[in-house]
Every structure is written in C-alpha cells, then in structure tokens.
Image 1 (tube, one colour):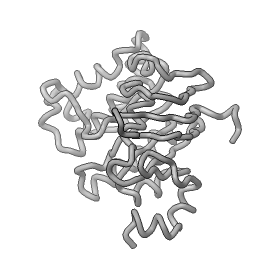
Image 2: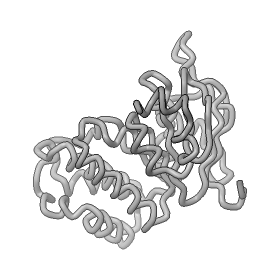
Image 3: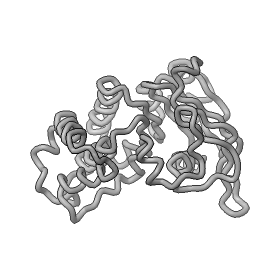
Image 4: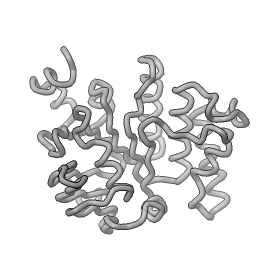
Length: 241
C-alpha cells in the first residue's frame, strides 16, 4: 500500500476483558477514501475492535495511527475531534429529542458555524427523509429512518473515518439495500473512509473494497472483497450458498 495515501494503520491491537482475550494481535490498514469490511461470527470481537478505535475500550497492547499520529490512549471526544466517528450497533439515537436536535448534537465538537451549516445541508440532501421529519421525536422514526439519523449524526462531526457497527441490524432487506446504497454515496461523494462491521456478509463483501475476517479475536483472512467472496471457507461459513 502507498503510505502517502494511508489514513489509519492498526498494529498488534490486543484487548482483554479480564481473562478473556477479545482481540489478539490485530493488524489492519485503511486508505483514504476506502471502504473496508470486517466480518465474523457473533463474539468474534468486531464491536470491540470499533470501540477500541474510538477510545471507548482501552487496548492492552498495540498502536492505532491516524495519518501517522498515534491516537491510542486518547479520550473518545479527542478522537472524534481528530475525525473518527462511529454509528453504534442498534443506532442509539436520542429518542426524546427531535431529529434536528439529534443532528445538532453530532456537530457539538465543531466551532465553525459555516461548516456546521454545510454539513447539516449535506445530511438533509443525503437523507431527504430526515428533512421531512426534522421536528419529529427520533424515537417515533422507523428502524431504517433511525439508521439514517444515526449516520447523519455521525456525518455532522465532519469525519475522515466513519465506523459503522452492524448497520443492517433489524432492517428489512429492502431498507438494508437502501442503507448500503447511501453508504456508498457517502463514500463516493465525500471521500470518507469507512470501516464496515457487518453480520450480513453478503452486503459487506459486495460494498467494500477489501475485507478482513475476524475469528476469536484474530484476523484469519484478508484480501480483496471479490476474491474473499469466492473462497470456499467463507462461502460455507458466512454466505450459506
């Protein structure tokens, strides 16, 4: 890989929960403007991986470099200010706040009013359904609309890197396809790098450039998504065909 185009390098990431080894010596790279996916069974360590990048979970060993700067050990709010935002599993919007208020909270780290307005307009043009529901309480939205709101809230932080944790969870196949189309749109139009953690291996492999397979906290396979999609062990374990 071209180091000049490297956004994030993760080296030897190891995380323990007591005696349990959640991540073990994980190495992952992501380039600027790239979508990568991380697939694996429940309990493989996928969500722990994302939470460690954001600083929510502390690693026992390893380094996480964003554009050459080691961010491991920084507070989560500092990591957000450096350009890393996450859409958590289960969306976790603020149900009693309006759509507009949820979006405004996503931009709380930004001091530039003009940039906030630009990002707000971007979110509404990307997710026009939110435009129609700005005054509506987030808790009354459908699952797909809440996912759009969670993604929009993350975009309000002006990220260089967007972390998506199970974006298809609980959504119908039609809405899942719509969400993944929007993920590709965000990546293509804004050049935002994306790490996609997804139980739906079909969608993850289809919409990413490269894929890492995580099993029991270890990376057991990596490569171009199209090539991994044709690997017999992946077909048997994750694709069900």
